[in-house]
Amino acid sequence: MKKDHEIRLFVIWAVSLIAMAGSLFFSEVLGFPPCELCWYQRILMYPLVLIYGTALVKKDAAIALPGLFMSGIGMFVSAWHYSLQKIPALSAGDSCGLVPCSGQYINVFGFITIPFLAGTAFIIIFIIHMRVVKKEGSRRS
Image (cartoon, rainbow, N blue to C red; front, side):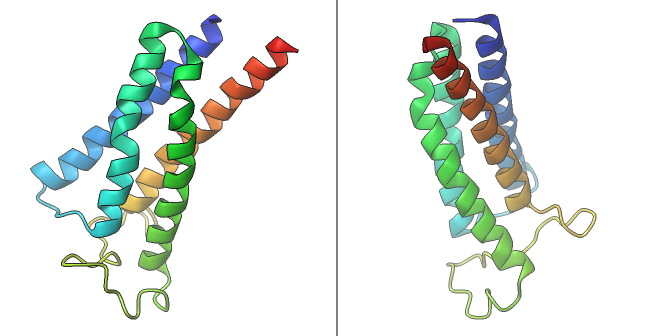
């Protein structure tokens, strides 16, 4: 595997690790209980640490293909969750569970919320992984 692929896989792994650590910090240290959509985002993010870590150690980007799909789905879950927080009409009948999905534990600069942070991580992971796929495709042809 080329050195640039290793760097990209390391960056993806680091982003997923930081996102996982951040979500655990919010819930376990700050005591913010996760809502239902937060759990779905965690379900999609946490395995990425193992998937990309394994791909990095084995130096095989093909191992990480499930991560591309999980990060793609995660982008949409985060976007929907963020929309529920920022568009009041969408969260009018919020029946997300015990913790409402429209709640905002943090709101930095009026737009940075927890789903925004998760969505940003998913987008970074997806875009960098797509670059790996594109480079692999151009290398083979």
